[in-house]
Length: 118
Image (cartoon, rainbow, N blue to C red; front, side, top):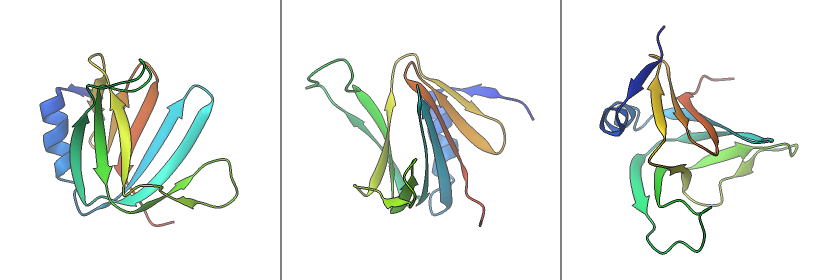
């Protein structure tokens, strides 16, 4: 199992193959960790040229679909929107190891994998 770095185009092409699947997204930013389970309906990208500050991303990956997020709270919560957004930077690294994607940004690490029934 190798960790292959991908171009954003290669990442996009491989991730689109998972449309219609149930996925798990894990986010680790500083001391914040959460997991989201969602039915991936489609994948899109957004561009925000009217950012208020540097914390708002100029580009973002949007994983569209219904899902639930598990934080440190006791019960999973429904996603507040019909998508999960991952901020993208010019320096974002995209990896794929044959079973999961990793997006490594200055803010944190996002992992996307097919969800297994628990």
